[in-house]
Length: 145
Image 1 (cartoon, rainbow, N blue to C red):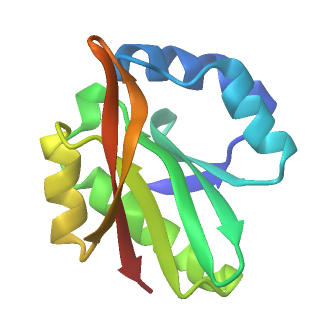
Image 2 (cartoon, one colour; image 1 turned 180 degrees about the horizontal axis):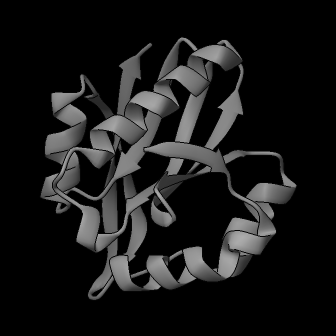
């Protein structure tokens, strides 16, 4: 896989993938605002095909992974693990000592990946995510870098 900075020109493709992958997707505005705020945002590619994207915010001494998505037809092949490895290196380059993220408790595939890569639960944000039946908590996870 190769990686490139995500730009405004990529947003139509990213938003289309986001809408098919998530029940409550980020909007084009969410991605655009992240770019304008200077957050790190990258595409992963295999040849000429986008295989995923990620958005990560830099904070003092830590990084906060806001969104990572692998396109459905490329999931379950190690791409998420590889992409997260790239993100760990970017966070280290920023001077981060740890990386944080939130995940839905029901997202078992993501939870398994994060646990495999050394993330541990450090908290819970109540009613964080929209859900079909109201709101859903988020598990807050962290990993030392």
